[in-house]
Length: 302
Picture 1 (tube, rainbow, N blue to C red):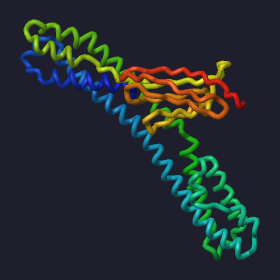
Picture 2 (cartoon, rainbow, N blue to C red):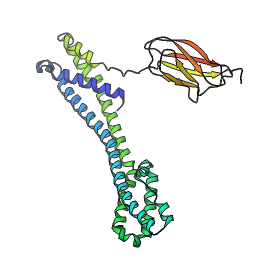
Picture 3 (cartoon, helix red, strand yellow):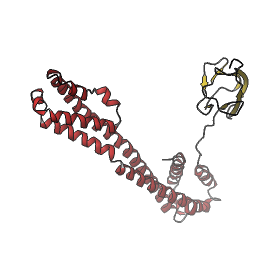
Picture 4 (cartoon, one colour):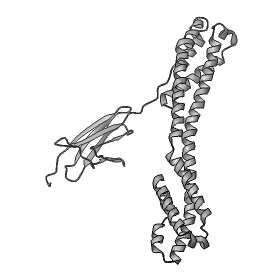
């Protein structure tokens, strides 16, 4: 759900609560208002339901995939210990090297690489199945490994269903929001005008609650660019601030930014080997962005 949608939903709920608390005789003076209030309540319920589908689908798919991965890894590590014992006892150093897996190592792998390693383990164990019998690895054990591997692979490589469910929920959410906005403009806003003179307090409360509070967008406090005399960006410039423990470093494109910094006048020092160090005063105003554009000259030593 987008931030503006969250703010709209808050507005829908405020207005709905206001209207359902209005005495029935007053509602009766506004034909079809009761029906519009009921529709608004139903739409709010629909929005909540579709939002939950989005959340459950995303989190549920991830949790299920993690569980299946853990199960496959657990089975694999159990088999690895037995195969390596067999390889050590039979001095099969090639096999010992092929199944040199650890739980920590497998956990660090991407899903695709993990599946590839599980395949290697399954193949190597299958080829040495007769000798592995006394170590507790048999056909049933390998079937368990293959089943766990395939379940994880299915969860990993088949995201289309989950994606489709999310897209459908998103599409339905958009439709409900569009319908609810139309409900306000074509019905609720018109009906409430009927009691504008007789119930001015209710009318004013409706108008106040009807406003959508726009999401607050936090502006940057500082946006800095450091270039050389040929207008080329200089990455790796260290920036320190007098009297502060905060430091910055310019990125690949020669800049850095920060979303917050104390207001006032601060001394910024720009330093990089090969260039002349430069210190400048910078004025930071609360609630506004400060642009810093620095040109560093190469030092004479270079």
